[in-house]
Image 1: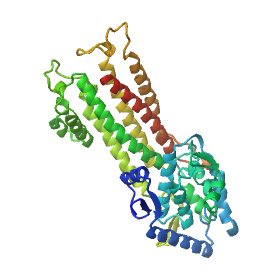
Image 2: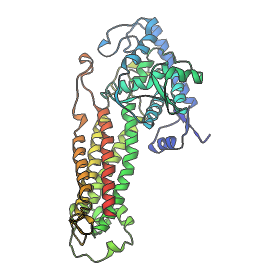
Image 3: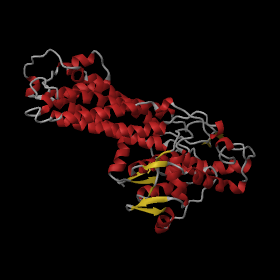
Image 4: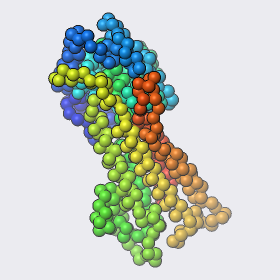
Length: 445
């Protein structure tokens, strides 16, 4: 069926994810994914039954409690307790599309067959996704190492019949919605709570949404800057292909191509110029906008690897007869590129505000503040103030979250990524950029 995507049938891509969201595709587990999940679960059950060796988070406590052994009859209770105790994200409720992305990405990661969950657990995640049963998750509380523990705990509380969800636009107790669908709360087995909570899906979901928005903002920035170049009687020479080819950064070449296409046939651009060159905010658009395009592309490549990875712990390898406590949950790869992307997007706003300032200075035949009878009328004086304020605010948000770390879990988890903070502040930068570009568009028009 064209309106169904089979989770675990292949790698996810940004184009596929956007299609799943915009076309409201339903999700089902691919047969090969079910086989991988069940094979891993069967192996784990055998391993627990046959081995006396402690297995972290499976037959032991968590974090600094890893040396506390758990009896066989309490392994399921251990996992349920984990979700209940860790569900402490705080702050603002995250937008529904991020909740759906988190469920999609977690289901995909579990479908790869290295996590030891039951098939019914993954199926219930898909049931929630397909029926728009959206757990309530908050935007603060993750350190980005041991994955996104707090937000993922809030995401999966409703699977065991606890917590609240949004369903049909109303806030409901999860258990009442489960009853309405005839779904039993999932009875977690060994390892499952840890598999659900350990992972980078909060960071990754925010990143996927950010990449899709950043790509749109980048295209919009080119279009608006081209209009500003016309309004400022700017020169097209800096956008010629020959100058891009002798410094062939991909984003720079793409930006030059965009501007030549957008301004082809423009009478304002083609008329004779009295000035020899334009200010940097116009002349260096290929270099600045292009560098942002390259930053978006690099961030997307890192994120694409991440969303097709297994990021919980411990990791199970049935074919190799191995259960390994590793560090795939650590969000450092994402934290670094999210900080980089934030700086790159902030620079689009920085250079945009400078073009706004050039347009209102009374240069090249334009009236001061783009208004008739300046003095009596203030025109577009204060929108530039607003743009400058947001540019300055974005500079604060560009402080690198990834440069920070703090010790947690009594020293056991002694280095963390802060990738979730890097992800969430991206949206503040992009919201400001949206407004800054709108102000430039108003001035250029």
